[in-house]
Image 1 (cartoon, rainbow, N blue to C red):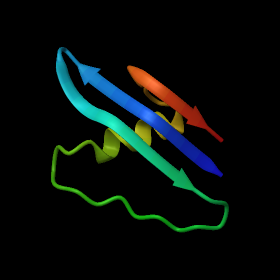
Image 2: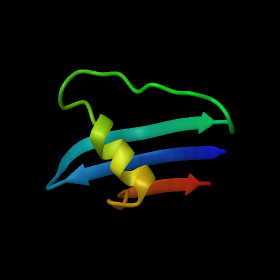
Image 3: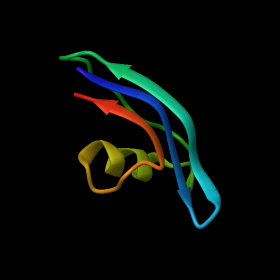
Image 4: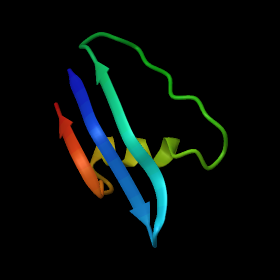
Length: 60
């Protein structure tokens, strides 16, 4: 299971992610869709541990 609570990410005073909440159960398949620059890669990098969130919690 993956649970994301109130994740926020800011780069140089620009808010990229604002209060993202998500829960994915074991065995679920999820797709993340959005326009270019909407924060998809940033969210995935936080989940993978490649970047730190400015605020919020991530549970595995």
